[in-house]
Image (spheres, rainbow, N blue to C red):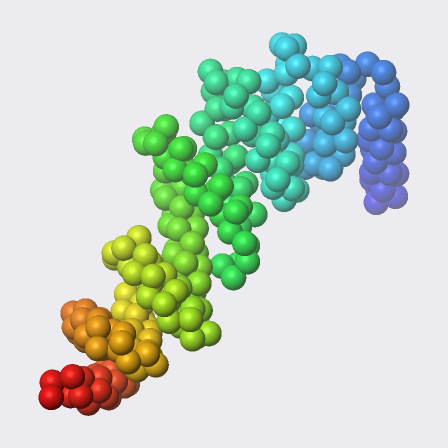
Amino acid sequence: MKKFLSVLLVLALFCSCSEYQKALKSEDPAVKFDVAVKQYDKKKYNKAIRLFEAIAPAYRGKPQAEKMFYLFAQSYYKTEQYYLAGYQFESFTSAYPKSEKVEEASFLGAKSYSMLSPVYSLDQTDTKKAVSKLQDFIDTYPNSTYLGEANAVLKTLTDKLEKKDFEIAKQYNTISDYKSALVALDNFISDYPGTKYKEEALYYKFDSAYNLAINSIPSKMEERLNNAKIAYAGLLKVEISAARKQKAAEMLSDIDKHLQQYSK
């Protein structure tokens, strides 16, 4: 019985492979389409992709094109080819705006771009594109069943962009470009008023203002020392760690000492 079942399995696999190979060689798009759908249903997505790629140009405008392009996009998505999946889902939603699959395709297209988002330290072009696509989806389908997931993915991406912008602003302080640090940190605080990095941003702003002031030429020192005191007052508006509070107090004391020469 086991031998019999093994033989049947081998025959089934042979027939399946034979059918797929015949479809690849066939000049009939309908044959390729039918076998591609079978491969898709068997979760053999790469084989389905080869067949879909071959018939895609010929199927545009045909009755089965909607199904074909939907499965084509899904095949790319399921094989984690997210650039191609995003492109195909976008093409699908553009070509079939009245499809019952258009909402799902819109979401998966946006999600495909989110899967391309790199770590925060790298270029964030793909992240920004994904944010735009997800926001468009949320605005278009505010009652979607995918809304919860879309919002969660969007938050992850926006958090990444926020961290990227903060690290760039902080970097100016790290390399002692204090003028640029003050501008960048001010812009960051303005762009992200509720940021979780607010304490750090305000601390590095004060630190930058302090270092810029005490290293200034005499004609600019008094003004910059007073600007640093304003930055210190801004820092006190948020809760800061004990270590930073002590360091900030030491800097303030040094500022006051320098300012004494202007009160004589």
